[in-house]
Image (cartoon, rainbow, N blue to C red; front, side):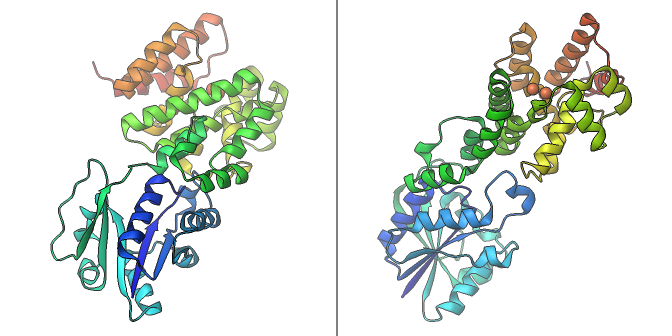
Length: 377
Ligand SMILES: [Fe+2]
Ligand SMILES: [Fe+2]
């Protein structure tokens, strides 16, 4: 008797997962196949879907495949579980079975370095599907069987990013999963409903533009594209209030607006970024401190911003819906050099405030000086 294990975050499950699972079951004909969603930290989960939804989507992935079912073993443990622990659990449940593990060829390359690799060599066999561009050699001592053909390399991170910024995503997931995502309004669909209701049409369009550019810059510069797209989607959610409402909210919640009293009296609009971070946390359930920090600092910035925070600051000023000439320049620059683009963005903002005679927040020249230090001539 054979038992096949297939673990993953399934956040969401996609066509690549489905193709691999179907091919694995067809070749091996296991008596049982367990699809096991991994436990994710609540911080990471704030830009994905809750465990119960990932389990349900794993169920939909397994549906109709002979002997296959979703399994909540790791989710119930509520902590990170290593493969050797999954194999031990499978051996406990099916003591007479041969345990097989289904992976993509990208995992095969790292298998020798997995925790308790020696135990894994002895206790499991490996069924491997080749991903384009990831033809890996068999690690020494592992019992490996390769699946015929190649499997689509769909990325769940990119899928989530597409969902957040309103791009096409349905063709990358099995139909049942797509229906579930839509019904449960996962991956920002519920956020988008709220934003479309509470923001003006132009502001909502800007929001999606910032989300798209943030995801693109994240991809280029090695950040999580789904976190960036989520930050972009929510960055202006604080603009649902009028100016008096912003001042009231910021005071009532004692938000950390720099120079709060002066800011709220001279330029209350600047508070919308801090209100946005507060709403993102309390109303939209975002826990990731990077995302919350990027939303809070997207307008004024602060000295010592992280690269991720600067990325959103740039995406906000340079999104495709921005009409002024500097926006296009900053956008092009940002794809090559984030530090230079940030300096250009801060300078553009400061220049605009001085030109129009608006109130210049005292933090702005400080942010600009820090940006200048990042770009030595
Ligand atoms: Fe804003
Ligand atoms: Fe904005």
